[in-house]
Image (cartoon, rainbow, N blue to C red):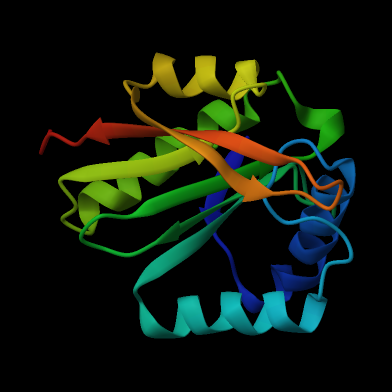
Length: 162
């Protein structure tokens, strides 16, 4: 599994992936419908400013992306990531976390932060395996289209310089 920085040619495939995972309504704060133009503008702005990055996990030449990660901020980067349904539990998330940690270290960050829903036990285990620790539970922080409000767990990882 190869993870690299997203390039403009990857945008459509990554937008498809983002919309598909949003449509599952379980893993991400964003719910459908996804405003693809707005998301694209945000991603292009992030890449253009250098205040973060987008990483893509390649499944193979010409194949749709297997996953992606977004890091926003350089001093205290916020990590968000997603993996295509057919590629979960196959090492894609592991590769994305390793690449994200590497990018954050190179950016000079001392800590990496993420938020995950409590029911996403596989992601929580993955993050813990990579040294992330739960620091806070944000109660009822994410409103859902059903009227529910979901909790989120804040996890952080201190970054050594090694």
